[in-house]
Image (cartoon, rainbow, N blue to C red):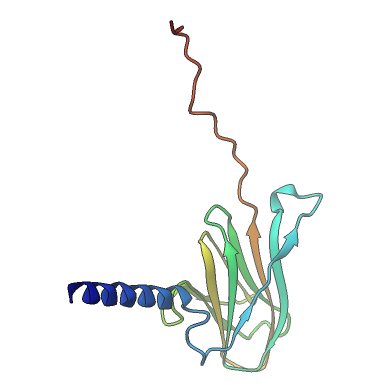
Length: 165
């Protein structure tokens, strides 16, 4: 009987952790989430800007739009920017999410110039929620993920000066 209870507990924990892993992008079907696909980006005149990028021109007609980005390394810098292409007196609220759409890790509102940006590091996926105060609103959305640094570590093994007999 103890084995069955232990197995049921382990299975419950496994299913619970799988549900947490799926948040926020696939678990709740009431959210229509759009993936921002990152494409290779390597400008020849600016090698430090190499990485992956997604740029989208958005005309938002709904109150809220949800996006997600996947495949980010903790070693890569991330930049997210929103810039109005239409009227500058409009504003949107932007929030970044990691495990749930209910809790924003970072958030803000576009400034007087119609711009909002955030720089950070994270692992795997993250979500982006844009809420418009007035609709329709048109803006550019850019996500840039830099390349991971290529650092060669020295060997931890050293040759010994001692000769063995």
